[in-house]
Amino acid sequence: MSKTLKKKKHWLSKVQECAVSWAGPPGDFGAEIRGGAERGEFPYLGRLREEPGGGTCCVVSGKVPSPGDVLLEVNGTPVSGLTNRDTLAVIRHFREPIRLKTVKPVQSWRLDTDMFLTLCTS
Image 1: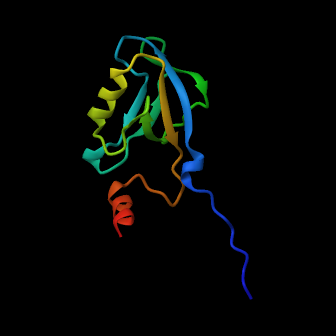
Image 2: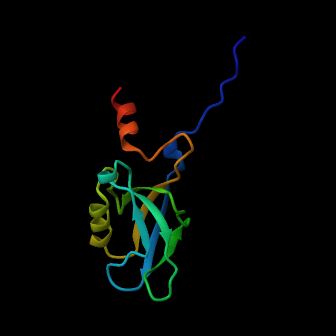
């Protein structure tokens, strides 16, 4: 009477890494960074800008990140738990191209850090 259990992949197996560069004024990343600790969320990518006058984000290597992907690391520096302003400061600190580690949030996984921390501490 035992049922076969479906083995689910851990979210760490879905982490993507890419190298990103941008064309435009210095310090303009070319992608929106949304969320942040001040909003109780993990930092995540907004839309990638493709404007001729502004900073245009272009992927040097790896898969193109999608809007909504959670930002985990920038050049090996963890950014989860940082404010939006601090995340942007980390990005601006490094020379381009920068390496981003992102993960797509699954339906059951919210960007809400309060829920994540509750699950980790219980």
